[in-house]
Image 1: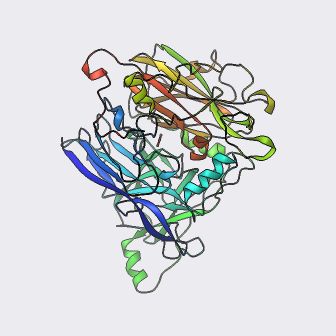
Image 2 (image 1 turned 60 degrees about the horizontal axis):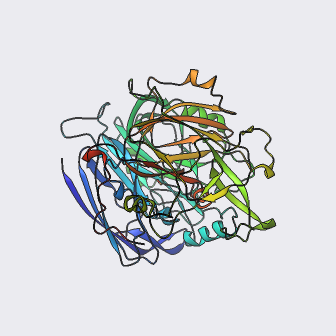
Image 3 (image 1 turned 30 degrees about the vertical axis):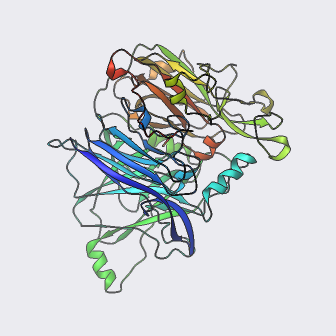
Length: 545
Ligand code: C2O
């Protein structure tokens, strides 16, 4: 195993898109940021230095961080932010993970521009469980804002208004040529006829789930969230923010230029969102030669499902399975049911800054708790040092009130209560967690992400979860292993995992405007026995609040 050293310099960088130059935050002047390439078992040492004007932290999305909770990165959860002028070195080892992950800023909306791919190859001497592709490309889906995303965020949190939609969706930082003033802003992936390529698709967008397709080419899904999957073939995929999907494509069509395209998947009726289409080009080499001779034909656009096509999204998601039988926890010690969704909060609550309409604003919650980050310390540091008053451990295991979650819920029924609450679990607990969507305010899909763990997605359905009937249909044989999974709109999803990693682990909806409204909570996994199961002292350069 190797140790890889990197310097990540966070700095304002002028970047031109859609005919306007923005000064955006980047790592090392690159947008998207550098691709990290490692093998399973390797160690990464990344020194992050902040030359920007905002606080920042970095998160290695999907990395298990076994024994290294201090390197996980969410601001005020496992560390205080790196202040302008400050630095912090993240050090962690990849343990039994292979495939595609990514890294991103984990402070307010900084991840709008501070993100990149993290690719984990098999250990030396071992190989993919499928034929080696001729080429591999990371494909990062993102969003572009014609202004500072941090100002957009202010709007979202102070007024509780739906933030303005982004100005373009992007593939590898480029909007593609279907926007006004973007003719040259398109990524071209060059391929040779007859070969097979691997796309490592990452949804790094702030607020959009995506449908993605490549004109005239089928995709064979072989992995997701750094775990191999049972291969299946599809024309279109749905990918939520935070998720990754690895697909093989046979380059077997008449030589030409084909668009790959993505647009939003948004199940919430009446919600404003970026409804534009981002593109890149899959270009056969022989076609690029004729293109140079001047026969540049317009690429073919793939059909994409309608923005609100929940059936297609769901039909795609349920196809995921692990490659073979996996070790799903069967006996459960922690039986959790979390309602997930939005609510409206009354602005007369003193702890809520809000200038929203009708004296209320949006808030998001799980089990009616709207998560508030501490500011005086990080949760992990407070726990490690035994500092009282930073958080409480009374996050409820089940909703405080039972009702028809997905039925006709009156708005007055439930207003989220702000709090910094964690749910405490013994080391090694076998956990079943149901995310139950609600129809408070509106029905929509939420991509739920758990830090520091992989979980098995054992079940999924529409309506209210039925504890008597639904578990009979759980897949306890070969469910997919993920770090982010969407709850279907007006439905539920069931996950199981073992809490085998002592520390404090954030769990949240990966739609960033929902996080800003409090859509998060944290698990506290207590120490086990022995050095390997105990939280180690923090690195000396851990930023202080
Ligand atoms: Cu990808 Cu807490 O995030």
